[in-house]
Length: 500
Image 1 (tube, rainbow, N blue to C red):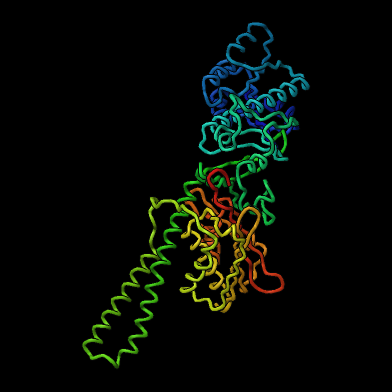
Image 2: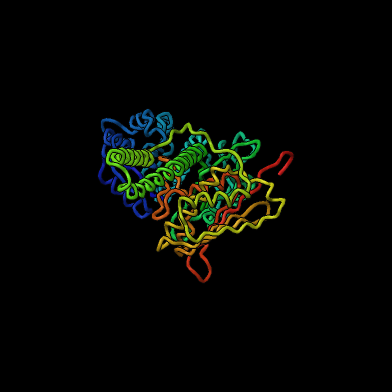
């Protein structure tokens, strides 16, 4: 964006103001005027001009006094002042320097000299302001809790504040100003630094880095360092905005630590999901069985015994309503501990069968295709977390099937360095945009995960977070030539003592 310099012309003679306006109006300046010393001080405070052309010989408050007062005002003390004077003696110039003047122009004007002096002063003042703003920016980001980086148009890291250097393992420097235009950064590209230590998730969102996605929306981007035997998981939420300056196009990148928010939200979802599943299913089944018994026992029991049974039935139904109400509005406390542990792939068929007791998917098959040696290994996700993942995937297959009668296949197989879990259904076919955003948690810094993707809910993003946190990947694609989708999770093997 082009900056238009503002020039304040101060002279008590209208003809002198008109003359200066005639000399400068073609130079694309924003011109303002004052006819006295007090008016000049007022206008300077209002405008903070880029330069003040100040006549010395004015009645009342002369130019020397105005210049002194300008220099005493912190708001305008740095504004350059050019004294316009017919006095050409040495004493007048010394007095002007003592008052704080930056330059002098003598009457009558040399037009070329006047324009050159004004142009030079405005440019110098603009650079001074840029340096001041840069100093303010550097001070703010040097103290910030978030990591800030400046990357060039070709993704070279030009600057990183202390927090960013800590997040990306960069050496600490006493001073790290951006290199001059055309000088290659020694830090490498941002993506190179990120991929050395983190997994870029969701992977599709990083294909356009650092630009927006193809639909013009910046999809949330995360850098995830999976938990290990020696370190906890670590999540960074990455934002980038484009900046345009005289040195070219750059991007300001913010790296915000959202580990606590992600872990807390996962804990809440895990806790609620388990309570929901563990309590809702037996209660619903109990009430259902009692409904059947009520019809069968009505003519078999005496009136008193049947009345007792009815009261029991009503109390159980009331208990169901109360528990379901609690589950609906429950907000688990943040002190819920993180889910830890591991799970053997061999347990997956049994978990699927257990879940299907509640979901009652009529056409459900499990294909287990793992080598014997892998059956003795584990993936770094606890059994209860695996149960929640399977519950979410199977429930979605039923919930989003047009008739609610899906044919579902769960396949467990080997992949490079780990285990692949696939859930295949014959329900809806998703658009490319839906597939792209299927796993996106949509983290909001002010309020945590919203997860409100229309028609998808919070479950799938939480499945993704559980998988990403251990170094796994998530993907989904439509089935070829038939309706439905295939959800695929690739999970690493748990680290063993002495190595992976």
